[in-house]
Length: 174
Image (cartoon, rainbow, N blue to C red; front, side, top):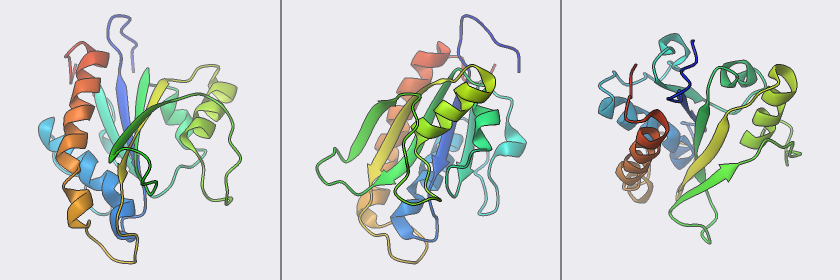
């Protein structure tokens, strides 16, 4: 991927367990965003890595893994999309993510900042990053979003489109 100094290339990296109801909200957000970008949705077994190479790319992961560092090194800006459970946060919470190592609560759960830190350590660069998280209401086993969380998806996609337009200068698919 050639770098364009005037426009950033952006990766939307959704993560979460689609078999734990609202924990899988990233799939809904990413597929709604793909529709806005005139791209087909990612199926239940698709992760998006076969469709990279646009000004704005999308991937879906069950959980963040160290191997994502190689992909992140190719981007100028990444937006991580996930669910949150903290009712003190906004329904759709947005925050910048710094490149710093955070010890996970459990070994299979990496924080986006840790992936950025790993990217920087290996590739001597890391993209600017943000987290966009939606309040989840139902994390029981099952598929499909709760009505409350599903209602947040269009607002999250609208916010993603604003960020993407700012970061790409409006060029969504060069």
